[in-house]
Image 1 (cartoon, rainbow, N blue to C red):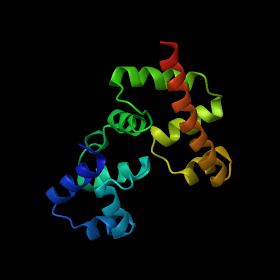
Image 2 (image 1 turned 120 degrees about the horizontal axis):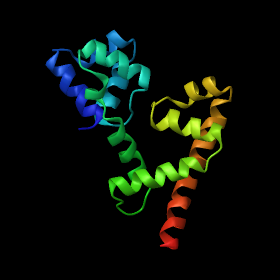
Image 3 (image 1 turned 30 degrees about the vertical axis):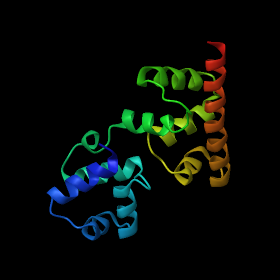
Image 4 (image 1 turned 90 degrees about the vertical axis):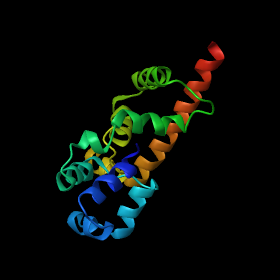
Length: 150
């Protein structure tokens, strides 16, 4: 189940409308709708607030490993098994400098948006977006290089 499906399920179980949930979180109705449709995903801090409002553990709302694998699965052109993908991503992360590794983890493990990452690392938001885009491309190149070596 995706995080959006989980939010929708537990919101309905609580008898809340999207607007009521949005009001509790001080966000727009449109944003809640985008989460539930899978067009966006809430950051880590919002997942924590959602879990409190919906009275379920954060890990019930989101399976971080599945979310990360879903995201990376979209980067690889062919289907890669879960364990292989984890191994590829971990070995890729080991080759990154500390700042890029931190940025990558903040984006894909903590679900922070680029502005929050920029604030934490003392960078400009546009710089973080460019670096994350480059890291995703480099992950694809890294994967292709591994495939060619085998």
